[in-house]
Length: 403
Image (cartoon, rainbow, N blue to C red; front, side):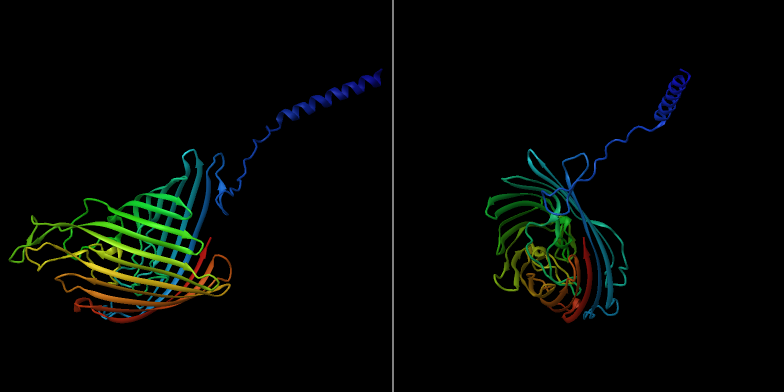
C-alpha cells in the first residue's frame, strides 16, 4: 500500500509540474501567408498578400560613355567627352475585376551626368517617365496618365542622342480610349497635353499658351509579321503678340490657328531571314514637334508674315526615318539607322534640312545584359549663320542590365 501510494503521489506531482510549464509556453504562431506566384500575366508577377492584385517589380541600370565632335557653333563650351549613369525602377500592378483588367504602371528614372554643356553640370534629378492607369476588357482599353503619345510609332534605334539624333517620340499626359476590333486591329482616340511634352512646345517666335489639348488618333495592326500604324494629330498654335509698323510688340494683336500632323509607320520582321525593319514617315503643318526635334537649333510651329502686322504662318515640316537590324549570331545584333528631316518657316530665315546615320553593334552574353557600341554622323544645313551648319561625328559605348 505504501508503494502504491508513493507511485500515485509521484504521478500527481509530475502532472502538476508539467501543467505549470505548459502554461508558461507561448501561444502557437498565426499561420504565415507566403508570397504566391501569379502566372496569369507572365513571368515575374506575384500576388500581394491578402489581395487579388498581381505585382511585378523590374528595373534597369545603365552606363554610357560618349564622345562627340564639337559642332560648328559650340566654340569651347561643349565637352567632347561625357558619361552617364542611369537607373530605373518600374512597378506593374494588375487585377482582374468585374469591369475588366485594371492596371497601374509606374516607371521612375534617375540620371547623373550625360550633359555636353559645361554650364548645365551634372544632375541627379529623379523624374517620372510613366505613371498611368488602364482598364481593359473585350471592347477596348481606357488609358489615363503619362505614357507614350499615341501618335508616336518609331523614332530611332540609336542609343543616346549623342549628336542630337532626330527622334521626336516622347511621353505625354493623355486620356485615351483604344477600340479593339480583334485579330490584332485597333484604333485609338486620345487627348494629349502638349505642354507636358518638352519636344512639342516651341517658342522661337512669341507663341502663347494652349487653350485646348492636342487631339491624336491612330489605326494600328499588330500581327506575327510586325506592326503597321497610321496616325494624325491636331495642335493649336497661338501668338502672344505681333508687331507694330515701327517694329515694337503689339500685345493686343494676336492670332490663333490649328496645326496638324499625319504619318504612317511600319515594323516588319522579314520571314526566314535575320533582318527586321522599323520605319516611319511624317508631315506636319504647324505641328513641328510631332515631326522632328530640331537637332540642336531653334524650332517653332509658326512664324509671322513679313514680321509686321502679320498673322501666324504655320511651319511646314516632314521627316522619314528607318532602322534595319540583323541578328548576326544568337547573342550579337547589328543595327543601321538613318533619319532625314526638313522644316520650312514661311517668311523666316530659320529653315533647315538635316540627316543623320548611325551604326550599332550589341552583344548579349546573358539574358538582360547588353554591352554595345555605336557611331553616329549628323549633317545640318541651316539658312541662318547664327546656329551654324556642317557635319560632325560621335560615338558611344553602353553597358546595361535589365531585371
